[in-house]
Every structure is written in C-alpha cells, then in structure tokens.
Image (cartoon, rainbow, N blue to C red; front, side, top):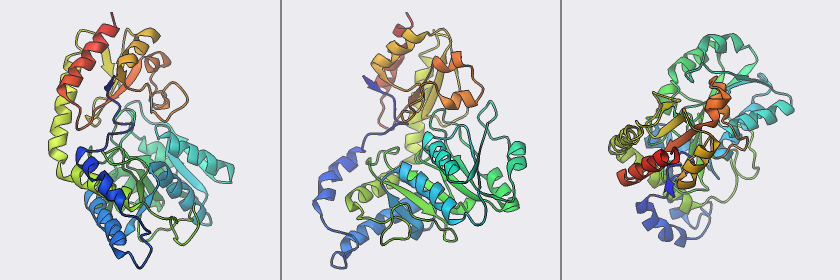
Length: 359
C-alpha cells in the first residue's frame, strides 16, 4: 500500500525518531521545583512553536491533541464570555471536530449558525456580515481545509472583527509546513495547533490564547487553561517538529510541488477534474469523471487515501457537498495528500495503480 494520506497523519520525522527513546527516558513532573530542567524542555518547545507561528511564547498551552485544543477554544471561550453574547458562527466546510463541538454548544443554550460557502470554497463575506449580530461573540474558521487544501485568507475576517468586535478562532491544524501563519500579525484570539500533521508525534497538540482572552477550562485542576501532568517528551518532539517545518519550509514546499506536478501529469490518460485548483499543493482532491464504486474501491485497495476526512464517519464528504458539488461527483472523488518524505517512485506507482484501476 502506498501512503498518500498525510493530511490524516504524518509519520514521525526520522530525526525525531532518533530522539524518541532519549526523550522518554527522563521521568518526572515539570511542575516539580526539584526538576526545573523538565520545565525548561517545555519552555524551549513553546519557543520553537511560537517562532514558527509568530506569537508570544507564554501564550502556548499544550493539550492532548488538536481535538482537545479546538474543544477547549470553542466551548471554553463560549462559556467564559456567555454573558457578552450567545451567538457563534462557523462554516459548513469546517472539520467535524469544530462542527460537533458547536452542535454541543447548541444543546446548552448557544445560538449556532453554520454558513454555506461559495462553490469555490471561499467565504461569502456579504452573507457573513449580514449574519453577525450584537450577540455574536465568536467565529471559527479553518485556515487550510483538510479535505481540499483550500486556503482561507484571514485579512477579511480580521477586518470584520475590528468592525463588529467578535472573537476569532482559527483551526490551523493543516497549516504548519504548508502555509505561513502569523498569529501576532493578525492579532488572532484562539489558534488550534496539531503535532502529527507536520511529522511530530501523535497525542500532543497546542492552543494559542491571546493575552486579552480567557477560557473556562474543560479539565479542572491547578491550571486556568489545562490541568494535568504534561508529557515533556511529546512536547519536546512537537517543538522540534515545528522547528524542522520552519527551517525546511521552502525545500519541502518545492518537493511537494514537484510531487503534485508529476502525479497529475501521469493521470492525463484518464478523465478527471480537480475539486480545488488553488489550494496548498500537499492536498489533491480529484473527481474521477468515469469512475464507479468499484473503481474507487480498487484505487483504495492499493493507496491510502480518503473519500473525505479520515475522521468523518458520515460517508460522502460534507465539505464537497457544502461546495455544491453533486453527490455523484462527491462519491467518485478522493483526497490524496503528500508528505515531505513521499518519493517520486511512490507517486509514479500510485498514478499507475489509479490508471490500472480504471481498466
């Protein structure tokens, strides 16, 4: 099987694999005054992440992963600021974690509006501005769509925020290593970050919270944001993964662009079209025009790829549906996602397998 599902999860970077055992050899609790070196490990990782996403080091808070970060941001902010308003807006192309967290908030008294997007995946800002009310406290947006690779521009949302005063949560789990994220430049309120989408370990994530913002914690204890004994080993590896992404950004981007070009150029003998033309090169969402259910099944027997997000349990992609793509085309669409260690040999083999699956 050829692994082209890096938008779901990336393998641990080889340099981090070499650090893995030594990182876990050290035991203890970073909150202990007897082990200040463990706290130092965490602070170094915060600095590495903060440099990558351009934010204040002391506003990075570690979680068990992106799902917890997103839930903490949305539910935690909604509960803390509920006396200021009860209306939250998001979009139909968001990750299921966002949509389900907002569904939960709808059951406890918050008014949630999920807006459609334009057929090209962009936000209709005229509709959005008409939807904003004095009780709107929060808008949530994914920076890079995990299914199509569509990149949302943050500037128009930030302009609306200045005008109307809502808070902004950005799901940046797919952003790291794919596009530059400048948290301080955009003055973002909450940003959810992942580790295993950029060759870091699974089981660790982070949440950025602006100095002027607060949340009601989901996990109560000694911390006002997220209590519990932190895994200094996973945190150390996440920091190094972000540092590698930043250092190798242009090299990796050129590599991925080459992979994408070669992949698509090999498929010219079969009819297909892209569901996203201008997104990040790492994600290629293809509709195979003449494919049937058996064709899609044969493709997936030789390639790790997805008809929608790997986390989605609903079958047909809700993202493509939100973009007004027909059910017929949605069911014959697949997401292929490339990683920094994907090889041209793998790309050529995958393309050949797709061609053979159509025969």
